[in-house]
Each structure stands twice: as structure tokens, then as C-alpha cells.
Image (cartoon, rainbow, N blue to C red; front, top):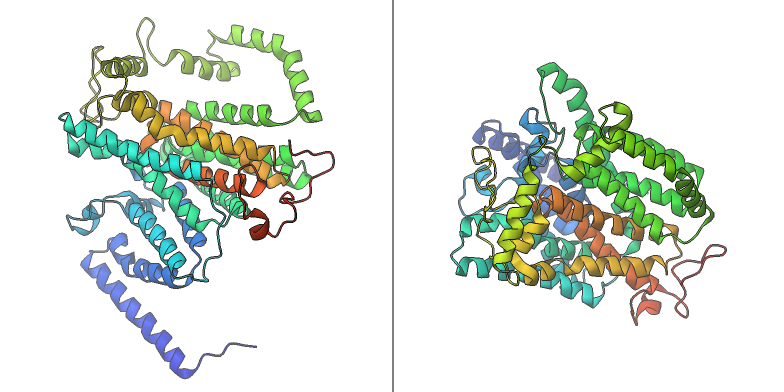
Length: 521
């Protein structure tokens, strides 16, 4: 049957398009051609349409792609020498709304509004028993509890810090993204049906990595030479997590299901993503890649491939030792991996001097020692018993935002805050580990390995590049935490009395038939 709108329907469509066009032109005139203001009516209409018609998972996946793919303006993408075509969207998502529209009360970025709005849509549809979204797999109660504890621990650190004379204006910037993480997890809990949405999540993050790699490569090969620039990075620091995710998912998917199609597609994606990661030149990216692959290695059972890799590493170990010993003091490009490893261990500094990060770490430890149980609370600067080079001319609030967010959390929250904020990471890895050994679907096992790798990558970013205040890092670890919970319920790694009834299983059968020789130990 061919759909043929009536003349009245056509008239409504025409009026709507003309009206929207007129409003858009008016917005362009009011905003003096600012693309953000010009697109506002279209965006508003899109939001209304999403609320009324679109399953929530599509909105959540779109938001995930945008957060990871557009220019992340808080980290000065491309060192602010060149705005990519995605820069306007990045500005719209991450800039405080009052700076865009001039309304002082809107002191939050649009991305926060999308998160809260998505949660609101999910709650409303559940309350009204809407059929737009299907039922979702629940997450284990302990995971929900520790995510809530993370949020309330941050609020405690804020109250504790302000009560001790902290600066409330600066404190809000110290914890904002970390406090939003449980809300992002709630958004994906309501929007993702269960492990069946894992492939869509993985493809979305890979697409974002390819997008960022294209921007990185174009900037490095075209813009930098044309403008004779010297840059330390080509996109931003937090993109390392996105690059590593894309590379790791290709490798781990092949490890779990070694098919020629997976290998060919995986190699192509790895090459394209690695080019962008190479130009971005973040040492932590390589550390994260090694950490993720190490997790896959230790989690995997003793397959013939694992035995082959283990024997190969043992056989090559003498050569690797000689390679590192010879390359430790060499500047040859042949020993570039050794030089990168050495710079991570020793830092980048002149001979006889401490690296900036080392001095900062000593100061954070000294700050933590003043109150090891509860910390200073937010709103306080870290102490500086070991003088740092003054970078206030480019970063006035640098003592509120240490590069090492891990030690910073200890300094500001002590053991109490540190444990409360990050307990969910332990539960996430625990659930992923249990699910891996109970999952028969290769895609589910791949997801479990990736979740552990993402947590390792997140901790690297937090330790070295202020990852705790990055939306890019926060979104990835939040969605992986939710997927770990849903995988645990579906695979039977966590008790779910209604599992058989909801999933249509018989006698607690696994989510799919096991491959030959597999066990669910």
C-alpha cells in the first residue's frame, strides 16, 4: 500500500516547513548569522519530535556519538588554531548556555540538559507505560547503590570543603563531570534494552574514533604545515580513550571470534584510527592500549592462540631485554617505543631536575597528608610545599585542578571520598569478570573485555590528563558500567529471579548455545 497524503495533510506540511524556515531566518537575523542561534529552532523541533516519537536508545546513542566526535571545546581542540566543521556543535554542547543566549540563570551546558531530559523522558514513559520503548534489562542493585554513593560522596566533599572555607565558585568546576557520571549511567540504563544494544554502542564509538582520527590527520597534514605551527596534540587529550576503544574492540572481537571478515574490517579500522592517534601524540594512549590488551590476555582461557603468544613472548624476552637496554639512552627512531616508555617512567625534564608532574604529585601527597581520612574538601587549592613553575598566566586556577586527578581525589576527599566516588569501578570490573566466564555469545565476551579495558584506560586518563573532568571519559565509563550490569543479569552472573520469564529461557539456559568445547565456569 502506497502512502498518499491528503491535500489537507500536504497543506499542513507546507505550512510547517515555511513556518520553520521563517523562524530560522528570523533567528539568523537576531543572532547575526551565529550558526548556533540559527539552528536553535530546528533543534527545538527535533527535540519535540524525539520526545513524542523516537525510542530513547536512539537519542542516547546520538548523544554518545556527538560527545565523542565533535570538537571538545573545554580541552582547546587543535590547540584552538583551527576549528573543525564540528566545532559549532561542540560549542553548542559544552559551552555554558548563559554565554550563548545571554540568560544568566542558564549556567550549565546543553549536554547536561540532554542528560536530564533523557532521564525525564525515560521516567515519564515508564510511568505512563508507553510502548515507544521496550522493557529494559535491570542492573544489579549493588551497582545502582555504588553509583548513588559516588554522587553523594561528591556532594559530601563539596559541603565539607565549603564548610571549611572553600571557594564555591571554583569548587563547582572540580567535581561537575564526576557528579554527572551517575546521571549518565541512569540515562543509559533507561535507554539501552540490554546486551543486544552492545554492538550499536561499539559501532557508535568506533564511528566517533574514525571521525576524530580524520580531524586529527587533516589538521596534522594540512593545517599545521600550511600555518607553520608547532602543536603538542592534534585533537584533545581525552580522545585517547576513544581511539583505544576502537582499536581494542577490533582486536578483542577477532580474539573471541577469529573470522576473516572481522580481521579485514578490524585491520582497516585499526590503521585509520591509529594514524589519528599517532598524530595526537598522547603517551597515555599507548599505555592504555597495552593495559587493555593485557586485560584481554589474562581474562582469556588457555586457548591455542594464548599459548602461542605466551611461548613467543618467553622466547623473545632476551631480545626484548637487549632492545630496551640498548635503546634506553638512544635517540634513534628505531627505539621510539623505548623512548616513549622512558619518558613515562622518568618524565620529560632536563637532567638533574624533577618533572612538573612529579613535583605536582609530591604536592598532592603533601596535601593529602594534612587530612588523610576526609581530605580538604572541594573548593580548596592543593598545597605547594614544593614550588611549581607558575602557570597562572595560562591557567589561573591550576591549583584547583591537578593534572593527576587520582591523587587530587585523595587530596580533596581523603580515603573516605576516594572510596565512595570510585567504588562503582570495582563493582563494574567485578561484574564484567563474572559475566565473561558465563557468557557464551562472542559479542558478550568481547563486551566484557572491553569494559575492563575502558576502566583501565579511564584510570590512566585520570592519573595523567585530568580525565575526571572530561565528558569524553565520563560518558564511556558510564555506558560501560551500565552494560556490565546488564550483562551480569542476562548471563546469570548476578541473580535475577525473573530472568527465565523475561528472556524466554528454559531452566536458566545461557543466552545462546555454547560453542564447541566452551564452558560457563
